[in-house]
Image 1 (cartoon, rainbow, N blue to C red):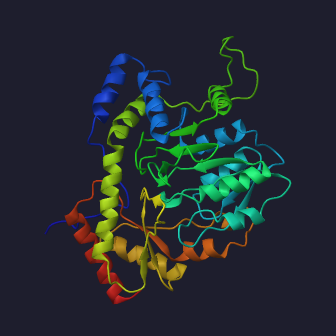
Image 2 (tube, one colour):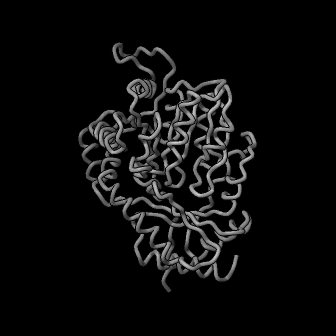
Length: 370
């Protein structure tokens, strides 16, 4: 009897030059934070985002932290963040010594609602972090206009949105700065790793300075302020360069994957997949499915039953304001979406026959009821 096939919610695709480039880095002797692949990845990624600077770092969370402190955010400041996001968005604000202030999200895009963000601005607000959740860009034009009126710094949290666009412009070049994650489940990976991108010479210079223990470029081992060891290794960057070569094909296959889910699940009552606004292109980091009327308990039970039948799914993020160490927030859209949403298996290398099997299991469970 053959073993039942299991479809993980995410898996990296490592079918390009990853091994070749890592081997080359090892043979070169440059395996730490200096090396040709670091420079190459920063240059290529900056060009891709349409910005002047890219600063590689060790992961996406420290990218947010480094961006915040480089923007001058610190104790006594407030930073507006959407309540529906991975916890790193709020934790990075706390790491900078500031206070995360939670606003609600748009019910269609699940990204920061500009009106809700505007209501949270106080005299202590210093920055806004819109999150391009699950691959859909946030309403950056409205948010940049809001920031300009109040003198706020905008950092795009693009950890989940490599290659997504808004009005034809790629995310990363829409705010004053942006951060990306290259964790193994992202649209491209370095295993662990991240990137800060910006058009600001001064901001990029400060990020680079603080990334390397704030060591003087003119006087070696002289440190003029508190800095951090947030550097990416040449080995990670080697993987990243190979992944970057495939990024557009990864995105194309993710779009095909979403279309495959859409066609196979068409006609199933009460479900809703990712919605994308007409002026945006979705990077589809995760294919999202929301079930009308479903509560958190029923959703979690469905996840257990699907996994038992070989289909791995995961719940939407909890609202960050629900965490016991953070302040409560009145964010009804975030809370409602969080309770009814799941992420379906999403990987660039899933095939049409894989989708047939996954959707057969999904439809069977929906027909049996939840």
